[in-house]
Length: 158
Image (cartoon, rainbow, N blue to C red; front, top):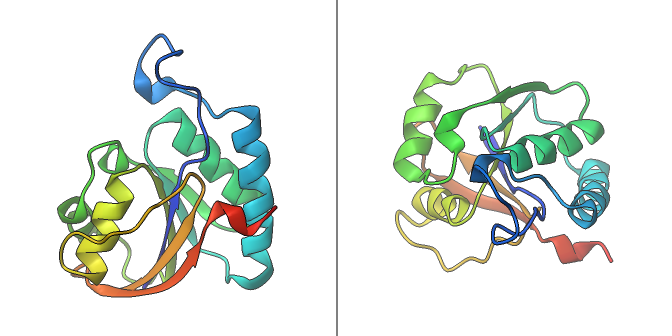
């Protein structure tokens, strides 16, 4: 299964946001940059069948932007991808996933994505910097092991 890990786009600064961190929205600049990057991605990347995000507003909004370029993808969100997720979380989640799916996009947070990708491709920590809106594909099996096959950083689009 191809898993496309997507870090949420730039969101409101947590120091300037009063309220539950899960309610922090994307900034206008974050929306603009993510939209451009995802349009580039859609030019060469096969559409995911499912886009899943954490429950955080910023992740849901990023998933909405991804769905603009992949409109046929089903949508879902799960608390399992909320801040604090790790590779063990990914493995549990994969066990629950429909075995017929071939491509799934996961929209989440840092350092969670680094932990999940590191666990999948290096069986531990991986020195990788996942910028906001970055896209990382891992060709992954059902026990959470795989090979990194794509890294699309946000600076790929001027």
